[in-house]
Image (cartoon, rainbow, N blue to C red; front, side, top):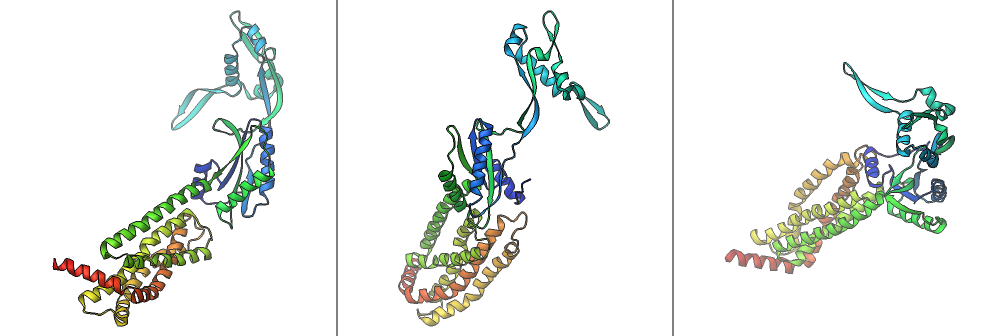
Length: 392
C-alpha cells in the first residue's frame, strides 16, 4: 500500500495536468512492460535520496494469474474458421454480452449471455468448448484451433500518446517545487541510462507553474508600467510618479517576510498576490502626496517641514482605515493554513497581509521624508502646470 497525502482541489489539478494525483510525475515510455517496471524501480531507488521528496511511489502494475487463449491461425484457416468471429464469440462466451434488461418496478436488471461460472473457471472445460464449423456444421473442440494455457499477465497496461508507460510519482515538501524537479532531472540523467527506444518525461504541477510564472512576471511588469502611466498622466511629474511607486518594494518586503514565516513556498498564488500588492500599495502613496499638493495649492501652505508633518498627520487615519479594513478581512484566510479548500486563497492572503503591514508602516515614514527632501521641485512644477490649466 502507498499513501499520497494532499487536498481535494490540488489532487484534481494534479490529475488534470499529469494524469496522476501527485505534484511530480516521472513517466517512462517504452514497449516491454518488464523493462518499464525495471526502469521505474531504478528511478524510484535514485529519487529516494533527493531532499524534499515525499509520497514517492511506483504506479501499481503487478502480474496476476490469467488464462490465455492464442488462436492458431493456420489451423483455423484450414478449417474455414474466421479468426475475428472466433475471438468475438469467445469473448461473448467467457466475458459475457448484455442481451437485454428486466424491469421490476423501479429496478433494472441486466441480462447477460455467457458460459456458467464452472465452465469459465475450469481450464479443461474451456479447452473442450464446442465450435461449430460451417458450412457442414462439424463440431470441434477449441483446443483444435487454439492454445489454451495458464500464464501471468499485467493487471493493467497504461498508454499515453499511443505508447506504453509507467509512472513514478511524488510530492514536494519543505523545498521549492522547481528546485526539487531540477534535482530529480539531474539525478536521473547522471545515474540512469535507459535502453534504446525508452525515454522519460517529467510532468506535473511544475510545468503549469513555470508557464504561469512567466506569464505573471510579464503581467506584473505591464501592471507597473500601467500604474506609472496613470500616475504620470495625472501628476505630470515622473519624480512624483516614481515616489508613489516606492510603496511597491516596501509592500514586497512585508509579503516576502510573511511568506518566509509561513509556508516558505513561492507558488503561483503567491505571485498573483505580489502583483495585487502593486496596486494596493500605490494607493497609500497617492493619498499622502495628493494631500501634500492640496495643502500647497488650496490652503496656502508653503513647502516646508511643518506642511509635510501636517499632511502626514491628516492622512494617518484614512491610510490606517483602508489598510485595516483589508487586513482584518484577510485574517480568517491567513489563519486557515492547511484547511481544505483554502490551498489557493491562503498564500494570497498571507502575502497581501504582510505587504499591507510593511507598506502602511513604512509609508508613514519613508514617503514624508523622501517628499520633503527631494520633492519640492516636482511639487512646484505640478502646481504651476495646474495653475496654468485653471487660468485657461
